Length: 241
Figure (spheres, one colour):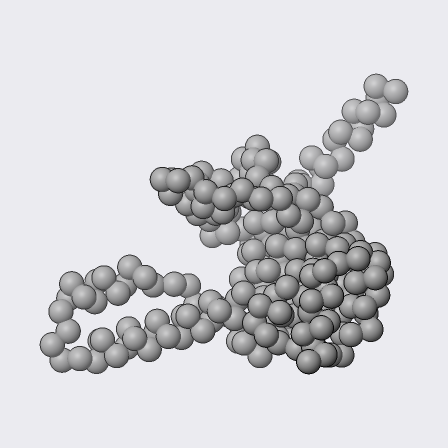
C-alpha cells in the first residue's frame, strides 16, 4: 500500500518536469498560496507578493509553459496562468474555458481589501467580458496622451504625470472579444450541468450593460427553472420587453 501511495505522489511532480528549472521554481512558490491576489491588497494597498510572483512568471514563461500550468497546475496557479493565456491571445483559450467549466474548481480571491470565493470558469469569463472596457479606456488614454504631446508648450511635468497612467495595450479588439463571449456563452448554455453561478454571471453581465440576447431564451428558461433563479428570471424579463 505504501509503495502505491508513493508512486501516486510522484506523478504530479514528474509531470511538471517539462517546465524549465526557473519556471518550476516559480510554480513551486505559487503552490504555497491558497488565494489569488490582485496587485495591491489590504486597506493600505500593500504590494502582493503572490502577484509579484505571477508577474515574474508571466515575463519568463514560454507560451507552452503558461498553457501547461493553466491546464495542470494548482487552482491558484491555473487562475494566474489563465490570465496569461488570455492576455497573450493563445489559441487554447476556448479549450481552457471548456476545461474549467467541466471541472468547476473553486478559488479564493482577494481584490484590494475585498475577499470572495469564486470558480476558475467564472473568473475567466469575467476577465474576457470586462476586457472591452479596458480596450475602450486604453483608446481614450492614448488619444489624450497624443493630444497633450501635440501641444507646443506641453510641460514635461504634465507629460511625466500622464506616463504614470500608462497601461498595457490589449491584443484584442472589441469585435474579437464579442466573438469569444458568444463561444463561451454557447459552451455554458449548451451544457445542462453548467453551474448556477456561471449562468447567473452571464445574465448579470448582459443585464448590467443592457444587452439583449433573445436567442438565449429557451436555454436560459431551462436554467431559470432548474435553479429557481431570480437573477436569470430578471434577465429573461428584460429581454422580452
